[in-house]
Image (cartoon, rainbow, N blue to C red; front, side, top):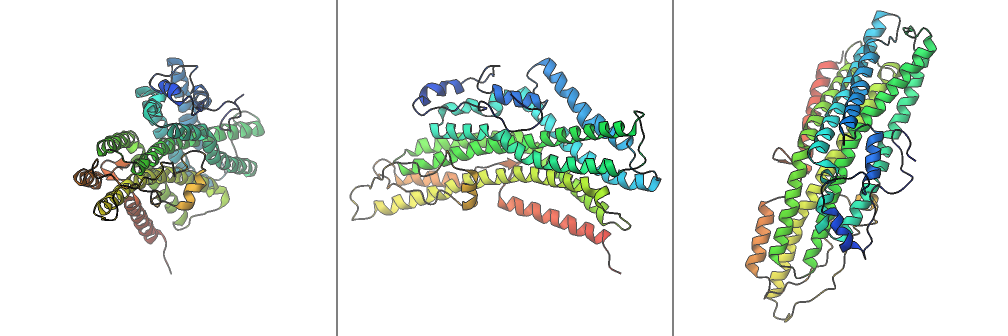
Length: 445
């Protein structure tokens, strides 16, 4: 059975794995775009219902929006304006400034995430949003790899949310036990504190989970394209036709544009909101006469860690898939150079054939295996097959390499490619803002 909130699934996988022998027969199930209550995504949809983001029907949509208004708007407003943390006016003012940044930041990213999820599910449906309808033409390795990542998506979500929630629970319990001068709006101050603490924790868990859910789903969709690119790199092991290579690259590039178009507003808006949140936090903690302690700024630190972690998940996934896509250009150039040199080698009378085999661990490999290699081109060690000059001409290969060099694939945000250069630019802008703000608030006497 499912537990409330975020946890690790203990029953059937979210998406049933397909055996290699039944791959062609089960591939037909990916052709449909509509979702059904008893399809292979029923467990995935159950998790969405537990998180109150399932809008598959009018009543569920109304419940989803109602929970959002209560937990992301009503509870934070009540917590900020009703709960009194100190008997003196100065103490209330100090805490209100820190609490305002926390509540506005969490509510803003939660509202953005909720609106994006609602738009995605309403316009595309769950299957189309997860690109399950595009798996019918993929290899069995790609399907199994994507199934593995889909089944562990909510486990990954739990890994990000539960540690932060445990720290928030410990802080809130300590905070309410230490606070003084609260309004006994239920008559009994202990009951009032317990109820307020539970509502605040529930609101914090809801807003943080919604934000991390969109980040994890973006990572999941990007990982599907990484699997496709790794599988696409295997075409250079065989004597493939340039036309088929070009058609497959166009298909991958088209899907990358679709992903970029869906998530560009979310990425840019989150980056702006989180930047403003961190600058406001820095201003509050470095200004003159600022009283920074665990009692006032503890929740602000937890909020900052959660927001920065979420945006880093999105940026890392985007840059990783961009560099995987751009590595194909380098690999095609090496393939073209190898074939051209061998075609003029007088000692080579026949092309050398290397047995075709999958050299990339597309399925069953842990994420840490890829992290050990870094973001470098993992196609560099792929065995190249000498092209048969009678079937693949020099002009066709040159045209393919020229096309890849002038049509870079990857995740874009309003025309800007999300790669290392873009990350360097973001880091430079953020560092400039931090130094400018520190110059205004920190002084030496």
